Image (tube, rainbow, N blue to C red; front, side, top):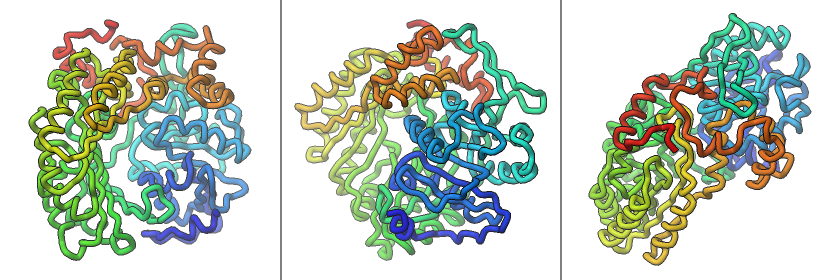
Length: 543
């Protein structure tokens, strides 16, 4: 199977011939090949490594791998989903590497990681990684490798102290965390030596050439797709949104020098094109890009677009997509309640949502998927009822358009203004209410599991004490019940689940990620929170 998977790949870059003393590196994705090879971040970092003569890189997935070096010096993981941590531990064990950094010695490779999960809050996983790269690979990867080469033959401790001085390189074992008590909050996070900075700053790439696929394959989860990153971050800054706050500032790819050449390169090997970004249609030249893709020479191209901003859904956009074999469009509306949208800074009104549906239908699309959320701070039952009313209005305004409402539970994310809020335990009932009200209307309702949202909240607000819980959970079989069982076993040694998941936190307390400076300082996030609280008239430490 292995040979056929890699043989099906069409590369859009030329790998370098490795030097005889190249750094033997394994670059892993902690999931199956079809999932990993569809990750643009994974593709780009792998290609960057493969184009260096001083690195010899082999890929590793949970179900397949290239020929692996006997004694790798570096092992990297690209992490885009919290629950994949189980596979990271499995893969390390399969390579006979201790899962905890404290148990590794000079004979073991350095284990590094990057990606959204580890940039947002690496702390629950900190004890498993020697090094975490905070930020954009464009800036960070080269600096990290160059610094590693300077200490390549040194002992492990010397390597780690040297690497920790590189901006954006976080070495968790060199920072000591103290707690009020075993089950209390974090008291302080201090470097163990004055050779390293007290805060690690995320590295942000500010260029106008964004990522594009480096490989196209029929074995990917999205078969034969070529992906182009049109924008990075999102200018809307909804107050719960990690995709916006984590990756600020909003950047757009240059149409002439980046986007169009990238698209032409991809369309020379496939006819499937995916435009990626949190808010693709907010590219300042998006209309020009649409005109470009409407040329007759691209008539056989199948076009997919990530979520688009609701008030940018024009009839022209819908027509272009319908002509390019797209049947559906996705918009994030969060709620049918104008009051809640105000609280979260979603600049949108119901008329614009209804108009988007009318335009989608008029342009020839057959379905519209909306993303909503329950459990938003300040939400009342009537807000949920307003979502039902909005869906009914859309159905009435665009008859025949197939409507889907995908709905998640609010999960607090690090580095956003809503990181201080807990998960609302009423959310589960509210998902059930939506299901009951929308199904008879012929609206397809797709709720995300409330219980898994709770686990996501646990990991997105967790600290280092959770490493013991994660090991136990894995041992018990990695199910929802495993987490409860592990908490029970660790009672009195770590905080209760509610501490991480449903408690509202005080703005004065030290956050588990306090020593990691991402996009905006804590003081700015507190100001953004205060604006929401003015709408809410709700104190963050009120229950």
